[in-house]
Length: 535
View (cartoon, rainbow, N blue to C red):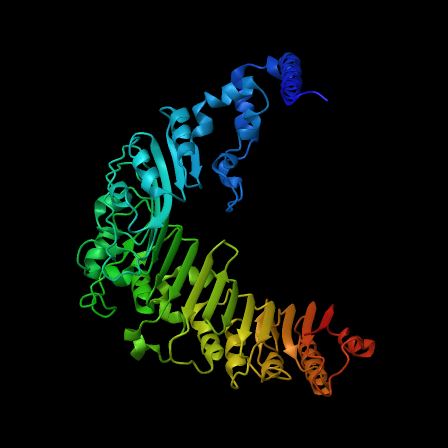
């Protein structure tokens, strides 16, 4: 057996031989790789191929295990060969999108170096203390910046007042402070002349024409004014300067920005400003504030409106009888998009009231009213009775979810207001109760009258095609009531239903087997397709 020194020398010799062999194979592979047809392409063509076929870094899923380098989609290409690595390394295009997820900023420094003088877009998730000062050394290179942090992070105040010459997009989301003596929000006072997108969360700012003049996207969430609250007239004057705005999102901002003494809905009924380019409007605030804003802006190009109302303790006197329409101005003509809505879904649940409307012209409306401290009684019926006030006769699809135990006359009012209904979907929700059928529903569908074309039909909603109802107590009385309604409608000239869907509760007494073919056969005389399922 040899000595330990001899064994060590033998191991080192074998390792050296292995390294030499690996190097020779690498050199041979390099020569073979260089002779591949793709390497005969000019560098400019190769770079165009890389740019065209590879995804942008934003298409990579964000998760806690993702590293900074793995976000760069060019990393694997750089490992193909030294030629490709050199091409990508020296082309600024591949280093313009920088996303930093780790606590180290070496990746940020490297990407900034390789981007040269090209404009870059930076997204930061961590270590603002080190990253923000590094960015401020490149004021003429940052064209877009997005970061999340705390209102107390060092560097945040400086970056919000950054005089960048090319910055066109700034997104800052700050977490609130739970320390009562350290709740002052940092001030935004950026002097970038090219800023077109501004999204701030928990930041203080002046409401000035100079900020809004060139903006196309403005989003303010839980922000405050750096000045005292404004009269509504002054607030509106500044907003009018945002003639280029395409997207306006104000969440919990109006109540902080408007003076309570001079901006109540009844205190000023002045002019209506026009925002000609506005496509999307989102406003979350006290219902009175939301309605006030809509009453004084004209948005001819609007395609999406999102309204959300949340009650404050000071709103207690106005909570009684409040509905989703409290988010809208008294003069509904101020929101002409309402008349074009062809599909509406209304839901009343434990969290509040939701209404989603859409139209064939791609108008999209979403309203939400948080449940107030006091309980609502007959919530869904209140909202249903106001639907004819809010929407026009263009409505052809209606979905309702909540307590469907309506008083007599409510179904008649709805069907008379929307005679062109083609699809009706009903989901009955009430704890500890299950109705055999919603009171008055089928009675209303087989009563009344309506016109379809030049013909007069002796039943509501003669064009109804699809009816969905769940859950129901599928017993003999239910079967008879549905059959009677369908038979009457067909006899009075209404069209046959194309589809009837009923979800039944199987464990209730006297329930009829929905799989019984004899029951299904009775319906086929009046319906093209019947779908019965157990709920």
